[in-house]
Length: 270
Length: 158
Image 1 (cartoon, rainbow over the protein chains, first blue to last red):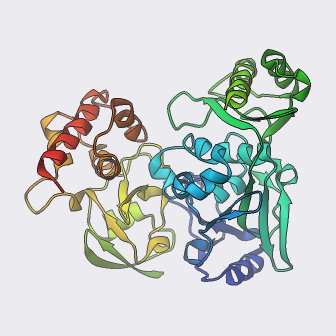
Image 2: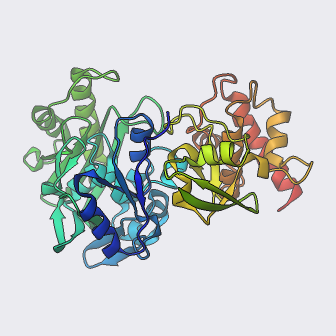
């Protein structure tokens, strides 16, 4: 179908974008890559009255190395982040996870920060941000603040971003130790039925699971002490998967256990 | 209404359209370029794939106003006059299409893919077309077409 009509704003600066968003209030929505928003609009599941298109805002597409990680600007496309040696050097998990996000044609347009702000619990990048303990930098009329991943995701497609605030970047911390991400999808590039990102460092191990809760589910499995079968059981105890057309809740729980053990082993060997 | 000018297949094209006009409809309805096909209109089927500044994107998931000033290549822009591009010839030669509905999306996707990866392995060729649906061919001949196009391009040079 065709998207419903809306008032279109094309600000040239972050300040103008924040101003337009603030004026629009609850009626306003940010358009970056549009790879989640436009399908929702085409299917008439979303009908924002005003769109603030940030594609013409200069300086939002940067990918920069910072102390302890990499900062990804709100307009950096998935494909650019995937190809970025700066991002790869700071946190190789980012590239590996992005290769599981949809297809190249979608990654060429969709943005990594947009995917995080969309906060789909079935998506890879929110899980990666949650696993690494990253953060989202947002700008509002009152100034800028950094929201830690643990406080950012509040529900399915819901975040702690306030009305009138624009996410300007996300920060992915480097991590000591190894990381991995594995998932099972019916078709390559589809949303995964289950997926697990893992981080194993000396004296510490944790996973972030997708598609098994309202938000990415982070589970500390340090107490398993390298017994990844035991770690998988700990993960299965913590998750609350739901059934849908793609998989039953039990199957999701099973998959998540298998994938957790696999991801942890891969991360430990990395 | 918004004045939108795009460089389509090398030519500046203008239309006055509402902000909600999808790039796919801008090409088809406003410019009359009906080579770009619209299948699912939510980004799954890939039939509407065009090249935006040389890179494949879903025209149905892009607002025309949002990409004003950018370069778009549609399936109409792949051939050199009457001579089909290597990718188009490979699809014809290998029977990489039957009904042809999905073909514009495959041609644009594969054209961009082979520019980045001129000699793909079989799994790379399969992954390259994984975002495009075809209900006729069963994909085998499409994957053959990708390899054949790579051969033709290697023979003919840039």
